[in-house]
Structure formats: C-alpha cells, structure tokens
Image 1 (spheres, rainbow, N blue to C red):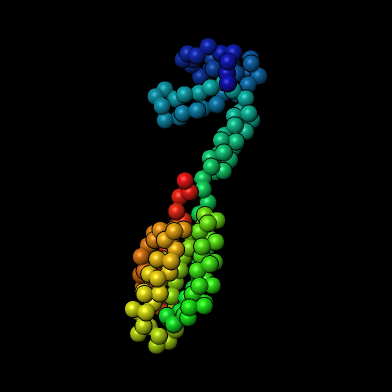
Image 2 (image 1 turned 60 degrees about the vertical axis):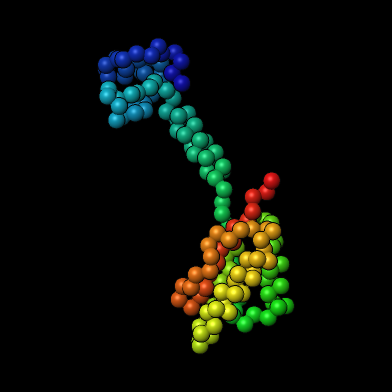
Length: 152
C-alpha cells in the first residue's frame, strides 16, 4: 500500500497533490495520532481488505450452541436414560447442555428431588462433559449447565 511514496511528513496540500498525481486516495489511518497519520492508497482496496479481515476474525470465533433438556422432579429411569443419551450426543457434538428441572404447581416442595436428579445427570455425563454451573433454583426451574470436555 503506497509503495510508490517514500515515508515522510508532508503538509496536507502536498499530500493531496501527491495522491492526485498517483491517481490514488489520501486516507486518514490514525486520526488521534499527533500529527494525524494518512496514507496514499486505493481506498476501495483498503475497504475490501478491512472487510476480509473482519470476516476472517468472525470465522475463527467459536459459536457456542446450547441444547436444552427438561426433566421433572419425578422423572422415571427410562425417560432419564433416554434424555441422558441425547445429552451425550449433544456434548460429543461440542454443544453445551442446559439441564433443567421444571416444578409444576405444588411439586416445588420437592426441590431436593430436583437437585438429586440434576446431580445424578451430571455424574452420568462426567465422561463427556464437566459441570459449568451447579444446580441453582430460578423461579420454578432448577438449572444446571454442562460444558463438553475438550478433545485431546
């Protein structure tokens, strides 16, 4: 960028003239610097490069997927195992699993049952993931989050 121009400090008028002479644009790179830093470059190409960098950065960021599994305080073993298999698959695919026990009506008196079910769930999944957030009661739900273990 601006290979044709030797680096140096020019006054604004000279810089604009030089840019016109090279049929390029005078672009302010760092306006907060003292004096402000400008470059003589092709502005369209500069914008294209910026967009390209942003896309690369966005592509590199990992997207976190959270799958949700809902249990009841009186979930029986068959349903528990069925949902456990789903959770294993989600964790193997790299998604976090949000497990919640939903208390309906007066079942809120079984808070301890809900916590026991969640801890049993976490223990059954310890080969696939680790508990990121322990069971916590939020309104009528007790929520726990399990993150996948890093693959070696």
